Image (cartoon, rainbow, N blue to C red):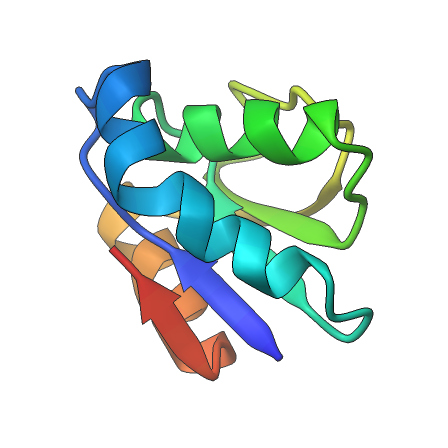
Length: 100
């Protein structure tokens, strides 16, 4: 399953833990799960830290331009988007479901 994670760019870790962590953990046990998120701060960065800390590797970061701002897990990347909205739209089109 392809799961996109889109959320606030100003979210603190407590918000991530309260709203996303348990949902993400539920899907991590399925070997076919893939997570997709941007390189933004907030929920995307907390997601990357959480997944990386648990050794989850099946992730892709969508980012603007050619340089990824936050690549905590050294994940696969999709680049070249003109703006964040374009990157988020690409995630929405790619995924089977969204968290956020």
